[in-house]
Image (cartoon, rainbow, N blue to C red):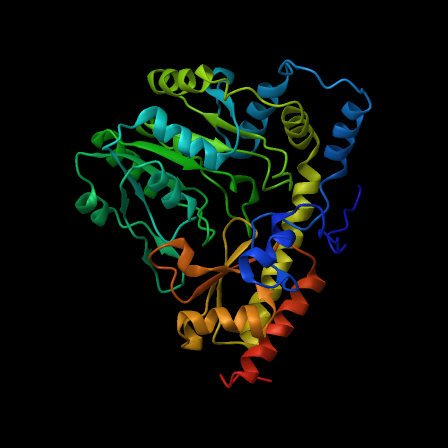
Length: 398
């Protein structure tokens, strides 16, 4: 069995990677350790690179037909990993999940209809509806004593009016890495189906369940869920190919599917570019062992962060993710104002993380850290942060 090297440090500067090459524009400095943008620093799996290389050896890159095994390969992967039997006709290519959200809004909602989100949550869930002229309604998550969150369905009843027609679900949740319980998803599905609300379930982190947890596809939990939902997925997070746009939509309900798919087809937005199916097929046919080893390494990174904070920085409490390589850091124990917290991480520790407040209400005092990198990079980042906090006079354990 081949062992993959996740300790390898790869310099991504100069490749156009947002994570490294946009540091100056976003943070004002380009010498920071980049632990922000949600792609990993691990080498893309060799079987994907090889599949792309083989196609590149044929030097004509004209219009291409969709490979016959494209959707059957996605279908088998979903069935094998998530126990959800989808039909090939339910699926279509979309040019990115955030783009897909915008397309669904414009295809399915009137201008005066509203979109519900559940903050703290991935910031495009607010920005995309807002920039497309729709009012955004907050249904905040409730923070539990263990640092994780639960849905507040009582509040959902209160904030939802007859103009609310879409809810964007982060499943698994970004930034807190929550895998939603089946019962919660069933209750949400019953509510949304009863109210005529379309659920857009962003499941891009579904193949990265950690520490024995298991992802549950929203549309699989009940007939009501299948009838009112559009699921977005992609191999891009798990196999580190975000730059090869390889997303797809799954719509079990025929009427909803025809509405959305016909809108996409009208502008040929459902046409996959040359390399997307190739990368997807390679990932889902040959990627299971790589995925297992990557998850094991990421779990080790998360345990390292947890132990480091417990031992040296007890004021920072990492929320253990149940899925994904993203770690939601509770920094409220530092008792810092927002600008002080940003200054600590960026200017004093030399780190680029995502500011918790960008994830909307509930993110104050938090930072999101990307643990999808080598252990040595994480160790350097933690050492920098420990030193910065010590020098700030916050009374750390030395």
